Image (cartoon, rainbow, N blue to C red):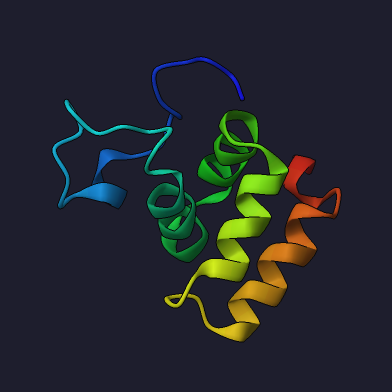
Length: 86
């Protein structure tokens, strides 16, 4: 995991949290789930840079918020080269 303070994602994705005190490492499931649900390509790329692939896949499996089709797409997209496309 990169030791930056936080991933470069829009604060609006986590609007209900106080991001001055938010623990990005301990709350990784919340961040990952939200980016997978409503994040853009830039935020998906940032997610992959900040968190491990294992953390992302674990969150996909754990999530009760993501529908099965969203989970399937997320797994496919993460394992493809599409995330690095221009």
